[in-house]
Image (cartoon, rainbow, N blue to C red):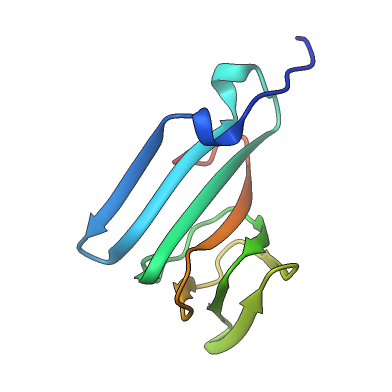
Length: 118
């Protein structure tokens, strides 16, 4: 395995815009295809008024908010997030993210090996 530097925005994107998700674009930045043995790093962008579905899964994940304004549902409470906010979501916790601003809400999400990469 070698060190690799790349432009994150050149990675293939997947858009989710239906059902419980609205205006969500995701990219796998670092994962199995790159040879990462323990974690997957994902980049998400939520359009204004966009949101992820409210969901729960067995694995933990960590989130760093890079740009924009939004809210994170955690433990039944909506908390404000913005540039520089970070969150730890334990396994089994219901959570959701929504954009409350007028520009994209951009965040990095890490999940452990074995979780779906996207």
